[in-house]
Length: 352
Image (cartoon, rainbow, N blue to C red; front, side, top):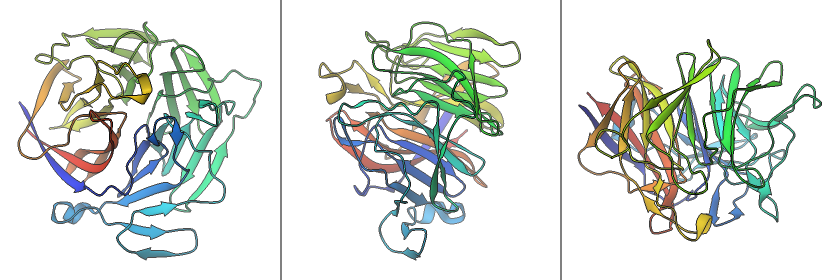
């Protein structure tokens, strides 16, 4: 049995949004992009919220304002708006690697079309508070097209993985790897059908795990698809998505890799079930559950939570915080079932 304790780190509505990205580096979570109203991207400001593991449970996150010239403390989040930055976007994806944050594509502009940047990433360096466009080494080589509601993960050293999402029309099921040193893309084997948006991937022990998503007709569930780098092949772990022995089908949720009680595990939580008839402009049924998947035993366990907890949501983002207390999960924002954009921040610690 796995228990969990939620701690509300911030209930302020300073940075409410959905379809944003969140990445954790060291003692900070960085929030970028998203929307307050459907199909209207917020600006390209990066907000950082400082973490202090040594006394995490004694106070909420410290908030501070800093820019490339000055740094001072007050009650506001740190708003970083450098002169060179990506255009505003929603439905982008991010991943943190080697002290930097990498963001790929999303939707924006007057037509709210996929942002086509010809395989480039936007690279944000918190230590210098600067953006750089990381372009491919050879634009004549194949690269993934612009898209939204796709998924990113990385191997912890030099490779970022990109999967699925929504291009101009339809949905994708492709899988790509990108080497940040050589700036080259490699197309890998596509994932098992159906193609989808709002899916989630995580990297652990040389494998990519994929689950959930929306295929245009229904939410996906009941399967974890696994790509093994060593064999260059996909396999599928099936389970019953009944909400009892395994998580129910959903999209726009999350999938995170971390160690729980020394065992490699995956976390999925929240997300949308039964989408709104208004599509992206409305909210469907939002879930509030949390599940742990033990990679070794291939068994799901629902996390039992006591006390205060976040309301159900989709279109949020989450990350893993690793500190002296062990690994935990941080969640920010998203879309509530009331169709309200949320700005709260929560931390989930596990009790085994």
